[in-house]
Image (cartoon, rainbow over all chains, first blue to last red; front, side):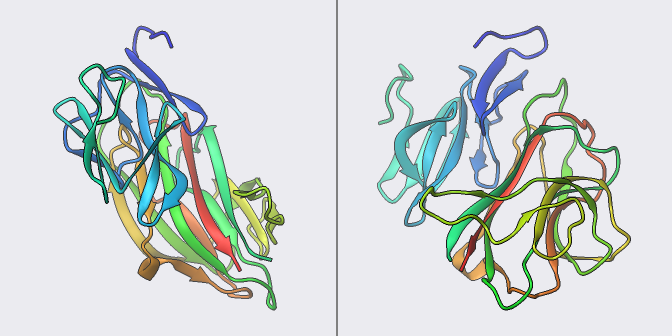
Length: 97
Length: 164
C-alpha cells in the first residue's frame, strides 16, 4: 500500500486501513495495546481465534498461522510470546522463527 | 441457543463530547445470559496522536444513550442469530454504537483505563473477570469515553460476548 504525505506507514487491521507517521514505540505490547505498526507499515494485532490462553496473530489482517499470548515490539522487532516460547520476525521479515 | 457475537463500529466519527461507543442491553428474562469477553478501540488514522484517551466500561439502568442502530454479528456461521437486535434506544434486548447523545441516566463505572490512541486499547478479560449480565438484569453495558477524543474521526471499536 502506498504512503501519503502525512502518513509514511500504511497497513490494515480490523478490516480498515491504518495510517501512522511513525512506527510503534519499543515495549508496546498487545494486549493491552490494540495494534503494533512496524517499520514496514505492517499492522500486527490478535484475532478472535484462540488456542487455550493464546490468540491467533494477524499481520495486515492476514492470519500468520501463529498463536501467542502477547505480541511485543522491541527495538524494531516483532516478538511473539506464548506457550511455545519466544518467536520473532526474521531479519528478512519473511519468517517467524 | 448459545453462541458468540460481536458488536462493531468501523472508521466512525465521534461526537465532540463524552461518547458511548458500544451499548448492549440484555433481553428480558427468561432468556439467555450474556458473558462479555473482549473490548477494543483504536483510531485508524490521524495526523497527530497526543496524550492519552480515557475509557470506561459502565452499566446504566435507565435514560440510555441515543445510538446508531447496529445489530450483533455472530462469530460462527453455525450459531443462531443473537437474541438481541439493533436499535437506537438502548432499551432491553437491543444494541447500538456511537452515541450521538448520552442519556441522563447515571453510569456505574466497572472498569476504567486510559490508552494511547496511537496504539489503541484491547481488553481481554480472563475467565475470573468475565462480565456476566443475566437476562432481565435491567442493566445495559457500555464502552464509554468519559471525555471527548482529541481527534474525532476514524475510530474503530467493538466487543464480543457469549450468549448461553
